[in-house]
Image (cartoon, helix red, strand yellow):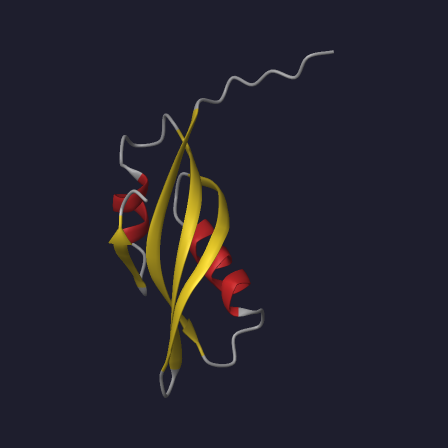
Length: 96
């Protein structure tokens, strides 16, 4: 039996900086993935590579390369625009 889906999806790979508060529940890459997955229209986020850590007094900035899968019909916004709207997220390179 062949699996089929009516959902059109888009995947984008990009480099982002995610601010993770000190004392967060999971590891840094897990927390980055969880926070990016909160964006509306995002179906899945996969951390491909940890690139840099910048520890601070109250949070650590984690630079990661991620692949983001979005619902292709959601709002017409690109993945970088969608993620940039999240608090604590900065897009470094929208397409790696």
